View: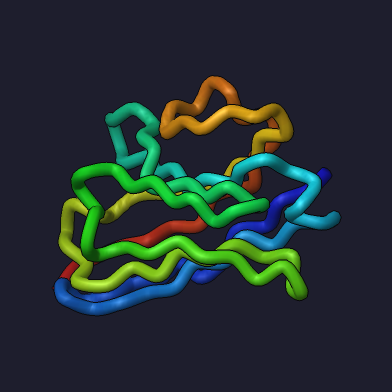
Length: 123
């Protein structure tokens, strides 16, 4: 099982980025896929998650209304569209998957993790 996160980069405040999380197998093999982020000196925090069977989505309050999580089963990829980015969104972003029927924005239940992709929001 491999998850490959990509799409990070440098963007100005107010800008947009789209992150991708590509799975080595079928994303339908997982119950949910989530995005987390970790800024320097801070704990890893949940950003958003999506259930792969029925597209239920969940967001941290800090990103609600600005970020959108969605999936493309044909490409076995989950995306995180990030709009109206703020400097405080700067972090390494990770995607993670859980096969058990768990919905959470806490890291602990997630069994599979991709490598991080760095998002820097700065002028």
